[in-house]
Image 1 (cartoon, rainbow, N blue to C red):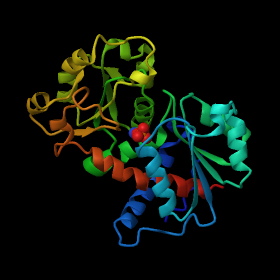
Image 2: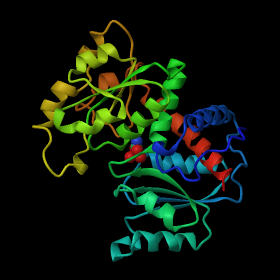
Image 3: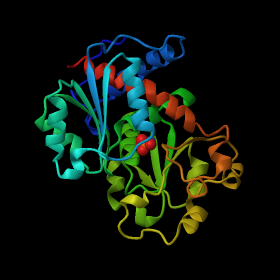
Image 4: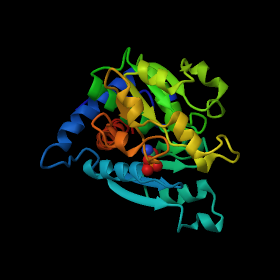
Length: 309
Ligand code: CP
């Protein structure tokens, strides 16, 4: 297993990682992916290591994926969700976390609706932190698993053309993916309703493509995002039907292309809005492979960060 030392003690965002960190994470992921194919999938790497998964916001994939990754590495695991906890009685984030840490926790995985919550914790507590999604800011392990999936299917990331479609404004997946893909040398174009594309996005080195059909004709792969209605306090689009007509990926759009492109979606999907079932369930879609790869990616991140503890 890799003895590489990450340049960071916490995984707060892709922004902080070097290109060498990214490649080390992918090399380690490949090794864990091999272990996950064996009849005995468990390794003792994180024995005597305690991880707390603190989810202050809903999750299906990320939460289960982290828990499984930790258990495959033989860590002791504590799960916390804000609903049903004393957060509803007015306890602060720091008090909640310090109470959990008093029980001798080594590493905290945190998802929180407030951008910067993991960064705040990293300045106040001794445990290592992994950001499992902070508001509309970053979702680093999602970007790592998306990039690993691209690498697995396309053989490289340097020079590939990746389109990101949808609600760029509210998407932590979009920001983390853009940062990772650009560090790895991919070309990135974004497409979506003008109200959902922040004007600052071009400062990240990406191009805005207004036409979905032109984006699909250009791309080797597209990452399709969900409209984040829960983060929209004003109306950015006239209706979901209108959105689906202009920015939804359907069979007709895919069949018009003279090539096969890879289709990714971080989930949860709104079938019939940003993607039809025919496309989501087609061979070109690698959505469930992303989920599978997520476990090995998170094992790699946990393993490499534990090596820095
Ligand atoms: N992709 C993702 O973060 O999904 P969950 O919200 O279900 O964790």
